[in-house]
Length: 195
Image 1 (cartoon, rainbow, N blue to C red):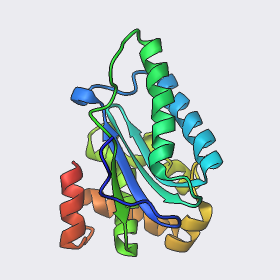
Image 2: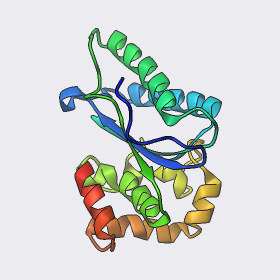
Image 3: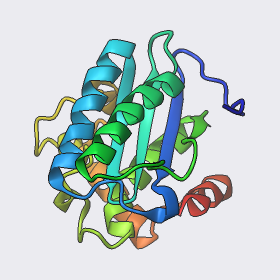
């Protein structure tokens, strides 16, 4: 496995993402999304990785995580998607790689970038034309963030610290989607490269 450019450090935040090989679907049915969410919950808790924001889409995913323990996100992603890929291949009588390549990891080094990334992740279903509003896509933790669902894959202390006003956060996501958000050129470039 090639050496990663990003070095994982305890207490730091990381944006993790990947997509299906040939942009194929990595989730075909609701059960696939649910299976992966159970794996994330089980492994992240065991490995002390805090899930901040996530969005699972038909052919790719985005996670914002914080490494709280000594086990790196790299090992966590390997465990989760190794198990998920085997299960997926078995369920659909397929073989071979499910993903385009190793997952991408970006260190999130400042608060402005961290806030913009949360909005970006939760806006993804709308941005890709899969849902008309972030609250209409069940496979992200946006509904948990805004108090409309009681999910466990989120860090309530993070939200209270960084986004104490949920109405303000909902407006920030909407502003991102409508182009009203003012992002720094570096953050804008980064988010455009992800698309």
